[in-house]
Image 1 (cartoon, rainbow, N blue to C red):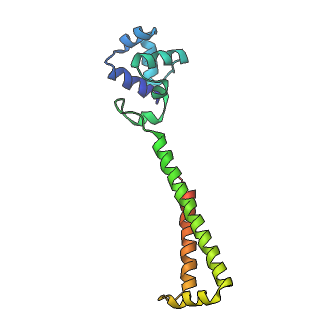
Image 2 (cartoon, rainbow, N blue to C red):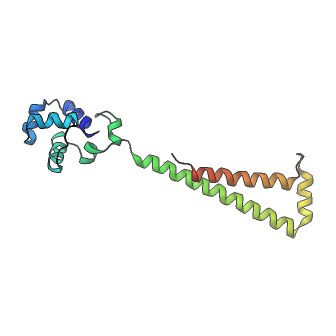
Image 3 (spheres, one colour):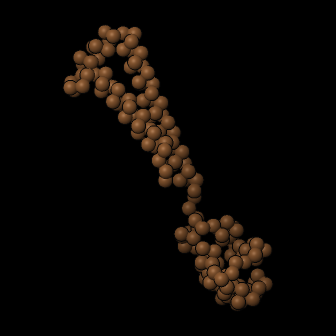
Length: 152
């Protein structure tokens, strides 16, 4: 919350409410109201506060930054976005790989039934080789879709 951020940065700067009020040209009561959350500073005063604390306006007003102490830099949303983008790329890759495998196995069964028979005979599992291959392809596609559609 903005009120907490103002309080934290004022304390970090080692200023009393009176000293901060003098620096930015307001009354001590205004600072008290801002810190208690009963009122909110105007944009001009927010800019003065950010200059006084030597921080950006974003650092002062952003909610995400409120989860950290004033000494800690705000977390980079870029890292989270990059991670999500990477998951999305992996998911799309798995879906495409599964689809290509399904298409290729279907083409193999139509064009060369003998090769499909040899592939089925090579399988040690009760399912024939084609069944195992189809399951792996579908599983790859499902995992890919989960990665694409998963929300953080």
